Length: 333
Image (tube, rainbow, N blue to C red):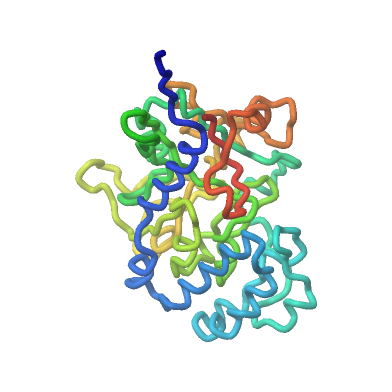
C-alpha cells in the first residue's frame, strides 16, 4: 500500500512568512541607539503601541502612561501636536477630548496634509492590495519599479521580495513574499509617533508628514513588518548623473532637489501605495510593472471589485494577524 506524500499545509506557510519577517527585522535597540532620542523610551512606547493594536491598551492609557516622559524628551514639538486618535474610532479605543485635556499634547484632529487629499478623488474608498504567492516569480521588478518611481535613496526600499522556505524536509516549498507597507487599520506607527507626523488618511493609507517628522525612529521599531526606513541623506552618486536632483512627489507633494537638512532627509519613509499616482487614475508602480500579474490593487470597500473579491476568498490571509493591526494588504496561498 503506497502512501501519498502531503504538501506543506496552509498553517505552515503563514507561520513561515511571519517568522521570516521576524528574522529579517533589525535589532530594535540598534535602530534607536544612534538616533537623536532616548532608546529606552522608544522601546517602551513601541511595545505599548503594539499593545494598543492588539486591544490590550487603549490610546488614552498609552498616552497617560508616556505623556510625562514624551513631554520631557520632545518638548515643544510634542506639546504643540494634536493627537490623531482624537475623534476617531480604533480598536482599543481612541482618545476623547476629556482624556486628552489632561495630557501635554494639544486636543484636535490633524488636517489631511497630502496635497491630493484635498481633491477628494477617493472619498469613500479604502485602498488595498492582494498579492498572489503562486504567481510571484521573484523577479524583483516591483522593487526596481518602486525605486525608480519614488526615487528612494540607498537603504530605503519600499518594496522588497523575500524568499521563504516552509514545510519540513523533504516536503518543503519556497515562496517569494513581496512586502510593501501593510497600510494597517490599527497602525502601531501612528500610535507611537510623539509628534503625529504619521497618521492615517480616510482612504486607508498611512501617511507621513515629512515636515513634521523629527526623525526619532520610534515608528521603525513599532512597525511589526519592518516596512519603515530612515532616510540618512545618502545618494546613488556613482550610478546616476542626476542623482538627488529629481525626486518623487510622494503623497502629492513635490519637494525638489535633495539637500542636507531638507525633508525627507532625516525622516522616516515608507510605501504609500504610490498615492501621487492614484490621484492621476494610475495604479501603484509595483502593480503596473509586475510581470507575473501577481499584484491586485483597488477599493476594498467596493464589494464588486476584484481586489475585494480576492481579499475575501478562502485563499486569502494576512501577515501577523495576531497583532491586531488589520492590514489592508492580503496574500493568496
